[in-house]
Image (tube, rainbow, N blue to C red; front, side, top):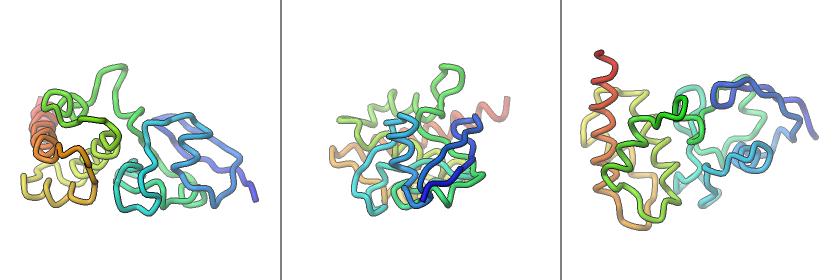
Length: 160
């Protein structure tokens, strides 16, 4: 049964009429045409569908639309600010932390969620925090380096 669901998406208020049991992943991709959030496993295991909900990284394939009422959601498309890439996005590029790119949006959003929770994150905490996001191309070390560099850049920017 469809119902009106209101939430904030990438900084803008939205209201949709959707089945409250539809997953956030499919609503983002089909209703909002935000295809950066990827379908991977559909079970929350791979991390390809990671988005930020109320400042926490979550798997959008496991979240129903009914659970996001009044939430603040950020997707990979909403991470840049006025066309300026976020430090995490820049670091992924600078450290060549992607190959095929399929897992990259989920990796970036998971890393962003980690840094929101812990701006003073250590390399070991990055490794632990990123281990549930899968990259089949083998860019793991570069991903960790990118998150570490982004953490430093974000701390430096906050100090200014």
